[in-house]
Image 1 (tube, rainbow, N blue to C red):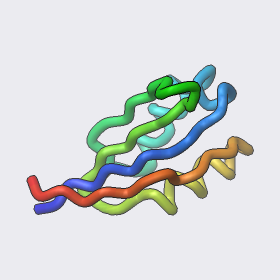
Image 2: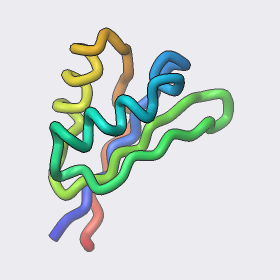
Image 3: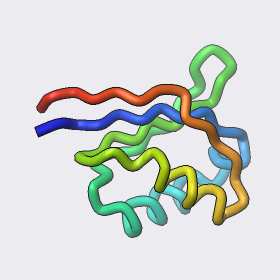
Length: 79
């Protein structure tokens, strides 16, 4: 089995709504295992771990909420 790690660059608007967005993502994307938000060297990031590749779905969900994020990195890891 593989685990997928998707790293996104996010803006302050995403951080201020993170609890709402976490709930929204967990409800609509059941393969998501965890979501974390970090400030890494002046760059706000969101890390999504899942059992399936969901980066495109996450991008669409954020676009529907009129929030801009971008995919920075994608990794596959065996569990």
